[in-house]
Image (cartoon, rainbow, N blue to C red; front, side, top):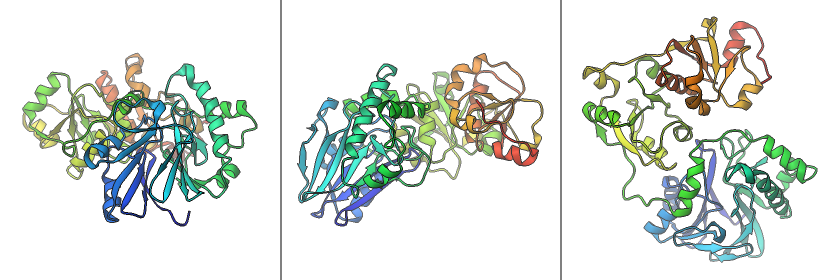
Length: 453
């Protein structure tokens, strides 16, 4: 791999990596880039490169592909699976097809499992394989989920994933493994900091590659699957038909109070991106709390409607362009704008604001404890007697919860405030949010967490 100039482009929030390869002749290849192309453009321009090729390993579910935008704006050649039936101009590849990159070659390897049409791309320097872009097939320490197509096809795709990983494992040990999905991705990856690996390291340490047989692999993979944001079920088709080509960078147009009030009357949703303490101190009634942080896009796609206008209330220190980009890369083009002046402008115009109590672990009494973390987090350790509903399920179940004093908790407070805002929308009152998480309770109580579901 010595002669390959590979630049990982990591999206910490989505837990994904795209890649840029300097082809050595003023051109570049990018692999699995999202519509937020700022990182790819910076890397290319820093090296004086033109993006000549954009390869997509599969029809992405967790972000809008940037390949079509590159093709429209820079003449980039799109390389993708012919079996994906994309409805826009691209070079459709099948198993074994090769593309001459000008010294380097890219060979398509059919590796279905994560999706039906999934390809891995083997990068060859002469006849020597340097690395393989494994997309959602072989990951560092894992393999990507197989339940994004339908429940009926999940096991069959898991068996295809097994065969795909076995095929990749026949590559030489020194070949680099360059996956798209990594730690933090809801497409499944174990926690950890490594985002690239080698075939040899994966054969030695990846538990799914060391499964005794296909049935064992399937049981282990399916047993590891948690929930995922509902927007995943929409973006595969968006990417098959062809993503939008942006005329301008996404932005948040300013909206005065009157315009916002009119939008809300017509069904818009207010999304408050401020910090937990700011939202707790005062917010517009009915606002959805999604604090702006690296994972903002995932939770926006999980909690906010995609088919109604969204109005943003942001903190003074939050970049409106960054908020707009995070929404756009997951297909949320329904941002109407931002409330100029924020909550202060809202109340100055005579409208009411509401607040949500923040409590410390030492202040917990006999209130119901509602833990809204993911199932695996809850099972690993939770407060005795806590009620568990995942945040992603709460909107549908909020109406069924009894109206009793409740403290909502997660790991730190951000997700819990989002849950409290959903409960407020459903008419719940007497709510508080735990400022902290389970370990804070352990510290002040001296008791142990329960670890059963």
